[in-house]
Image (cartoon, rainbow, N blue to C red; front, side, top):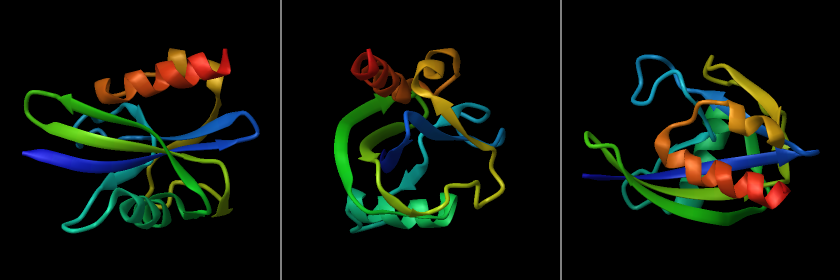
Length: 129
């Protein structure tokens, strides 16, 4: 089964906002770009707004598709739509108790991400280059 996911690359003043997955979740303990699963008949853009409001208490103003990644973890296959979010209303925080932080783009190479996020990290680092 393919799980559709919308995720945000939230950028502000050269920093990117990340959330750490709870240990009990799939790919737990790793840093990720905030977002979540698309519900039935929900477009990735709609899921992105809903998930960001729920998870990190922000509403994106202009989300632009950055990349699309399909990854097979063996036990789960995911289709991820990554959106660049550089303008938003609210203050980004861990609204569901998850650990969150702002990181310099240069720090991304030192963090542990789920495998499906690694091509996005590489693209962001190259873009910064």
